[in-house]
Length: 83
Image 1 (cartoon, rainbow, N blue to C red):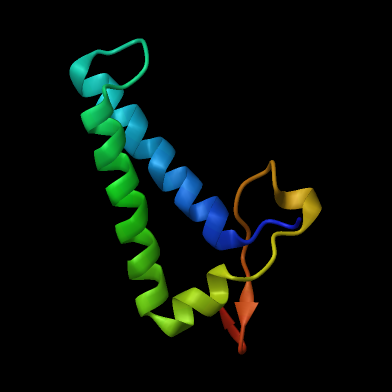
Image 2: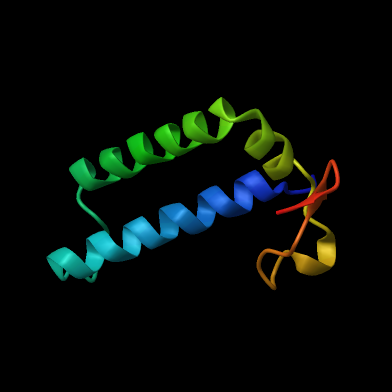
């Protein structure tokens, strides 16, 4: 199944949060359950924030071309506007 930019953006945001949490507590193993719950809540809140802005939702619901999946995000044009 093709990925969409929304999934890529959320994945990168969550990875950034997880990395920051790990550095703050200097934890080299698995995060504690309370932090995992906080990350799950953050993921839900980011998804709700994305969905609350129709322009952003439409842009991030665009499929990611196969060749760009590993290289990161690229400029996408939606309704004539670059993102």
